[in-house]
Image 1 (tube, rainbow, N blue to C red):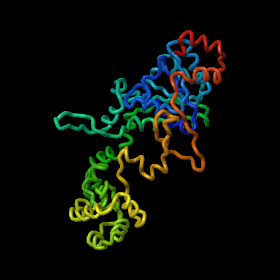
Image 2 (tube, rainbow, N blue to C red):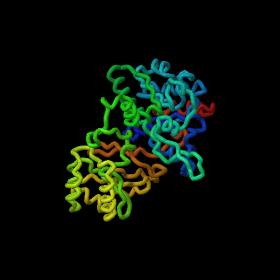
Image 3 (cartoon, rainbow, N blue to C red):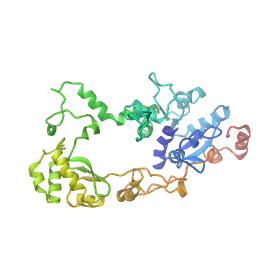
Image 4 (cartoon, helix red, strand yellow):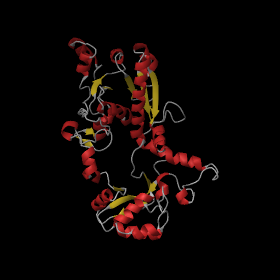
Length: 393
């Protein structure tokens, strides 16, 4: 599963030692979804980079015992199965806190540990449709389909989970007491999209209490980015070779733009207001700006923005982003030669210090002998006996 793996990916990238416990045969995520790179999915390579893998058959007493020994000196356990799966094997939070009172136990799941959906099987897109993020689309023949979108729940859930883990560890180190946590990827999707749902909720109140912006004569706009459709001074425009995002909603920036293109008349005719003034629905100004933006390339407009202090941004695609100069400066690829696929690095940076390269995702049980020997002190004979019994796959 991406969610549990991605929680600890964030921590690995920042230097944590993460041990991935896999069942005999390995994590099924190794073959899940496209693209498959040299027989392993990109999803698995990305979400498990830098981890150490041990295969333990938790259906055996020896596998359970080894797991408990690993927990004794661990900071955190992340449950990668449905809520309660480890508890049924005698490895739940209450079991593990007897071994390590400071353990932080995190469960990440689709719909969480409570509620009518808690036991439902699901995949990542479910959390986004549940949260109201992905509307149905229809093709030319009238068939409904899933439109292209950013997967929010399966990415946001791990981020919230990682923050929770770090807070839990800090609490445990300060008090000596661990804790049990859980995060639902569906909840995370809703939490990220808070502005729209909270705006709809606010609009349930009377207009005497909740209005729109002063720049719109207090008329309510649609929530979130849906309210941007009729904007003019905050809008996408076609350039001579692509598109640009124009964001001169503040009067100061709008004036800078007009002076920069030698069109002070536009500012005099449509001065707007100080803040959040999008010139909503002003078709005359829209026509003017449409012609103006087509007069330069996107790169030329970006240079203009720097010269005349005007907020402008490139409109990239996931494919063109890789060639953007800001991306090239900030997001150097983790190379395929050392990671199995070219990957984006964690966006967190430590000033004046480089983060260590996390390295490639492990093969199933790649570090079993190393982990059992170095961390638990098992000798070669004991490891061989476990392997003979199938405990190590």
